[in-house]
Image (cartoon, rainbow, N blue to C red; front, side, top):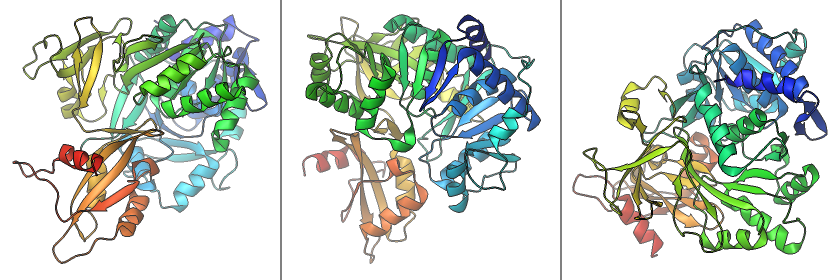
Length: 508
């Protein structure tokens, strides 16, 4: 099997003059992209990056983001995409834990992060390079790249070598880094293409952030198949402009979160978007409501509306194509080449309609959690991997998620673990205990809500807690509402019962 760098090189020869990437008014052909990746690879080597070294990427969606992903692939380095919405302290943790030697970031984002006090933990980081305008004391990536030869880099890279290290929110307050190989990412691209019928004749729209695996999967799929991929400019995000870009580029497929599908349905119903243009509409990251599903199916009758269940660690595990009379509430059937099992605590297979933990075995799994053998051992049962979701299987074979074993909240496609937010809230000297839950929200999927109880003799002010969260947490993790209760429901083990908190809030 090819590595990701070799896959792009093959298409550089196969689709030489075809547009690979289209960003704003800039178009880059496959042969041009292949040469730019060669130059970027040599630029990384000039910075001292070798096989296995981590390179952190703090970037908006752009051509540079794509070429750096593939430059890491070609040199054998490991790309570490950094979530742009992280607080400076959270970014510092990712840089330190990953032991990234080089940080390449958008100049304006770097300036803001450095001014806000981002200081990488540990001593591995050696160089910071800016993309675009930014602090003059930081070297320019474009100048460094353009000074290099475009002859191919010779590196000993294997399909089983790691390509990306993607950090996910941690159940114990610290994010975990999922290490993924060339092979696992290439298999995701090929399996999605085979399942959904996407070919080199299609035009994709890269809309979701490339620091997320969903955005990365779309990049991998598009460039491995030889499609043209247009890149949406994140600095100017607005639903109206998303519709304009879909029409301008003639996009036939993209990956969305449910809130974006709402805007597409609105546009189709207003007559501002031709419902026949989009052929494949992929949704993921949070549940698709029945109402929204029915609107999309009615408004885009010729499109494949496909709902994917997956995870950073797993890849795409199951999918369901929605249509009139389709199964309601299910995450569908196992994807091609995926072996899904529902297991009891003792490791035996659950019966039909019996709730157990969902495990997946297949070619798209991560290798493990970086520098965390304990968490890796807990997640795997032999060749099967779980991320803590409870599910059941119907007699017809359809899979249904029942609950999240970890209490994870998904808001606007982002994962939020309550423990992480609770630890921040309890740093306030007036807070005795905290509980963070997710409540249904039509636009976000779930809304992050917190309930705190005060220490004896103290008054808690929600405004102060919001300020604390603003300093220490990414914006999507911050509670949109904070309630103060005299006491929180406590279980027999002394832990706060989040489910009881959620029920009380839901009925308030």
